[in-house]
Structures are given as structure tokens and as C-alpha cells.
Amino acid sequence: MKTVRKFMFETDFDDAPEASPRGPARKVKAEAAPVVEPPPPPPPPPAPTFSEAELAAAVAEARASGLKEGISKGRTEAQAQIEAQIASALGSITGDVAALTAKLTTDRATILGEAAGLALAMTAKMLPEFTRRGGLAEVEAVIEQCLVDLRREPRLNVRVPADLLQALQAKITEMANAQHFEGRVTLLSDPTLSGASCRIEWADGGLERHDTTIWQQVSAALDRCLTLQGIVPVPQPDITTSAAETDSIAGDDDTAATTRAD
Image (cartoon, rainbow, N blue to C red; front, side):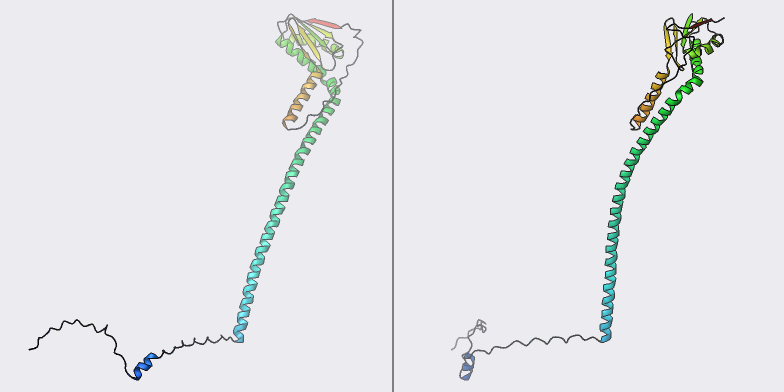
């Protein structure tokens, strides 16, 4: 009696060896497989074609575009050139203005200095005439101020140029009374004085007014003013004030006139 064996599905048909072909089939398999050539590439697309109108339009468009680009480039270059010229001109103008300003400053200083020198020279020339016309008033003003400030002094000695002595003699009493001066005023002619110069002395002091000193003070003040403005001070001119010689001056003796306030 046969034994029945259960089918276990253990057979793998994938790994089963191929059956050996027989006859002509084996021979065909033994021959090499033919090489298959790849298909040829597709032919290139046909070249585009344009009509004459399209070509003319394209040329006109290209020409217009080139012209526009050229004009824009030309304008840019021209603008850059103009700006460079303007910058160069401004730089030149700035330098010229600086040089002109420096020259104007120098010229101004020169003109002011020369004008100041001319003014001093003219004043020095005219001073003698000014002194002749107004010297008496200047001396009277100094005397009157002393009569006011020194009202209680017992004695004042007033020395004046010889050419002013006579005119002052006629006024000194009136001047002393007007200022309520309580002492004695003595007028003396001093040959060392001229113009509107005078010298006043009292017991413990004195004062002097000299044309030369005043002139030097004026010149020094002008020099300080010019120096502050950066201008070289001008040379101080010499001044000469003529003092008339009178017959009342004899040798080195002083001619005196004394008055006492009432």
C-alpha cells in the first residue's frame, strides 16, 4: 500500500535550470546577439525666414535703439565734461578770490596807513596856525580849571609863552573873580614855552600843558588804532610851532604880571 505524502510547496520553480534546448534552437542561442544601432537624431529645425518688411523693420528698430543709446551716452559724457569744467572753473575762481582778498587786505592796510600818515602830515603843517588862532583859548581853559580846583591855594604861578602874556594880563583878574579864587595869580613869560603851552605851579604841585606832548599822545593813540587793525604805524612827523619873539623878553629874565583877586 502506498504512503500518501502531503504536498508541502517546497519546490522553487524560479531557480529551476532551464531546459537545455535541443537541435537548432541550441545553435541559434550559441551565436552572438546582433548590435542594435541607436536611432539617428532628429533633423535640425528649418532656419527662420523673414520677409523684407520684417528685416527693414528690425533694422530700423536697431538703428533707433542705437541712436537713442548713443544720444543718452553722449549726453552723459557731455554732462560729465561740463561738470568737470565747472569744478575746474570754481577751483580757479576760489583761488583767484583768495588771492584778490589777500591783495585787497594788503591794499586796504596800505591805503589806511598812507591816509593816516597824510592826515598827520597835514595836521602838523596846520598846527601852528591852529595854535595861533586857538592857543589863547586853550591856555585860558587850563587856567580856569586850576582856579576852580585850587580855589583855596594862596598863590598860583602861571607861566605862558611871551606872545600870550599881554592878552592874559587883561583877563586874569576877571577869570580869578569869576571862579572865586581866594589867592594870588602871578603871570610869567617863559621863553621855553610856545604855542598853546603853559605851566602852572602852586605850593605843593604843578601841571604842564605842552603842544609836543599832546601831539605825541595823539600820534600814539593813532598808532595803537592802526596796530589793532594789522596796519604798520606811520612815522610821526615833526611838528614846529612858531612862538613870536616879543620885546618884553630880555635875556633869561621872566616878565611877570601879578594880580590878586578881590
